[in-house]
Length: 293
Image (tube, rainbow, N blue to C red; front, side, top):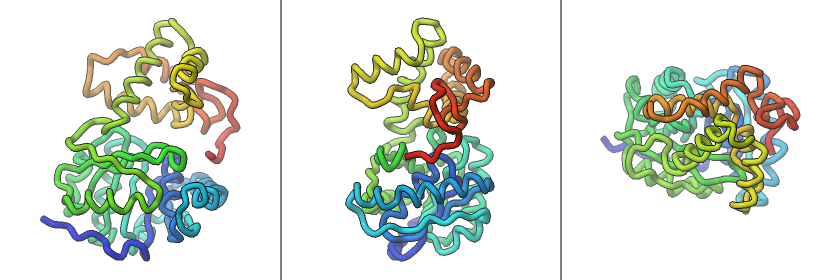
């Protein structure tokens, strides 16, 4: 069944479900052309942090990326109201399959029929979210990395996504400073995340075996690849609980993967060291609950 794409998207809002580290960044990017983006989260603290982040960074982002006029990021606790009239919804809730399935069933029932329903899941294929979706032709993965500094994203069909929807996303997202790349077949971890997952896993295994520590691995990584940060600092930015959720998912599909990386992550999480968002992870030089820059 063909699905109509929203031709009047420039005059309609976008909704982002989830105001965490990535949700607020996704909202920022879709607010770079003068429009309205509504961020939904049950946590008042997260909603406030998302709006504050957008207010602090929107003008610089628009200028740096050469985009339009700064838009507005609004916060809401009411998902049904937030999706009224939208042309796009991006789900960015925690990496729990049951939660994502619930979110998509509700979005399918309440969002406009021509609205595109996208998942920012970092490891789950959107095929897994459509059992209760009546219009799966509009559902797909759009996996973001760390905008506005890392603006690539993976685009992947749910297996029933209309080709027009995929082509529309690939054409329109660059207007918001984003660079979509299509995974041409279903792939757990999409394109770059599969490569990044292998780097994370082996880095953690080196620590698990007592061969080295996070600081030395990061320093070697930076020197050898010319990057500003290494894999452990990057995991701190994502959140070690999120990293563990993703690694558990990979391990469920690949029982041959070593247990060491998950054991290392659990050790830090059990101490309350979740990364930058908690003030400490592999490193302890963060301010608790920072507004990301």
